[in-house]
Amino acid sequence: MYNIKMKRWSIIFKILGNINRLKIVSILNEKGGMYVGDIATKLDISIKATSKHLILFGNLDVLEYKGQSGHVLYYINPVMPEDIKKVLKLFLK
Image (cartoon, rainbow, N blue to C red; front, side):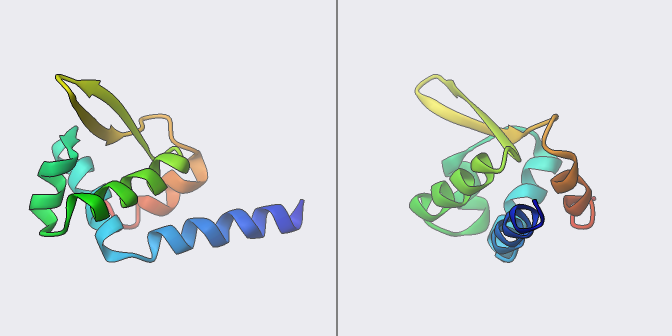
């Protein structure tokens, strides 16, 4: 059990250790749902890089997404795991 928790936190901190990922969470927290292209433009990074960041957050249940008019809308998961929510509060307004 101890090693499982350590491994989970190692993954969480690795994902949160990227400034663009923290910016993505901050932007989505502030703006609500956004499309990949809009997030990429706001951060001035490629859509491919943005998509990779979003996938990592999706794997942690930080973000939710839904298809809309042929595009994917990303937004903060209101029921994300409590441990991650507590850590993200340090970075969110």
